[in-house]
Image 1 (tube, rainbow over the protein chains, first blue to last red):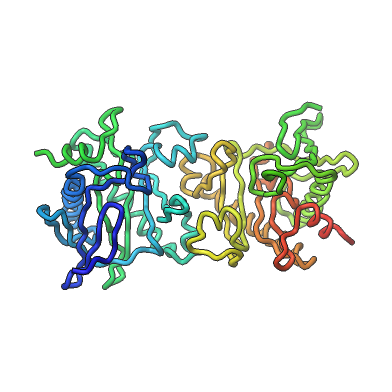
Image 2 (image 1 turned 135 degrees about the vertical axis):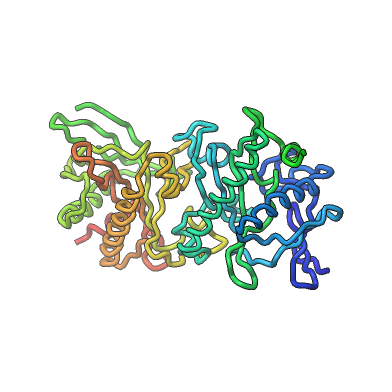
Length: 228
Length: 228
């Protein structure tokens, strides 16, 4: 099993059947020991964080696959904290697609002159490029097209899928009395068919969830979501 | 004559006939004594900078008015370094619309992973919000619409006018052997008719011009452009 990539929160291996294996680590993004889904550095290590992230990811992906949403998910092995996925290529060096239901985080930092903290944002979609050195800058549809990262047609697909998937995740959280403030998704192209797929994890580590006024930490969120 | 607003490079007065009077100052934006059209602070004061900026602004606006492009320009008085304009309201607290022909400045800082310095950008348009505290963040068409700053229809007008005006300015520079790298325009709504107007100045202070590989300072640019 060949190690292809060492990520901040996951390692990626190539399997002999052509699939990839994602090994979830106990490292989570943040700064100075405080979790922040928007951070570019590993902020802390929490025992069991990898498995909890995988379990929630597997929960959402299984349901999305059932609904016919194209994803890279094949299956998960909780004993090894691994997930088998279809190989996919990312757009450029990777894009993050954010869906916002409430104004917090970098959106609030940028547009605080026009929004109140926590204001409703009606499933607002924006894209950032993955670039740690440049602090993941936001990028417009026109710039994505000009830089040959996404065509306008692909952008429309990404935006529509992002709203659909994020709204589904928000509805799942709502069943447990939780509110989804924002979520960060990743997409790629199926290495075989070129179809646009949802990739990476969907866990506490890439969303902000609240119960009333109370922010819910990723590990706590995963417990609440997976409780019988 | 009532002083309405004290800007970084201009003061704005209200005239008795309802028009506004812009008084150009000798202050230019920059940092640590170096001119930077993208800067938010007054970096230096240059004798004659205000009048030179007004003369070039008047040159471009006269031609744009002749071509039927809707602008706020009425006339200019070089003795007083003032320009008379129609009153206009800005979008929110003001937007800047940037047209880029070459990758430099903040575009290069954001997207340097995908572009080379000086690479052609094909009249790429982007919008930033005027917000000194938040360093004039870029904002997407969707965010402008969601925050009620511009409708999608208004965005389309702004984008098309920006390309048209910037291409015209670029062609004027080309007549003098100069290349326009990028330009920052401002638009507002006619206080009477609500029509979208080009507002503010069009001078060396809001564009980057090069002669070959050599960047041309605003005052030098104004001399070169207005030389017989």
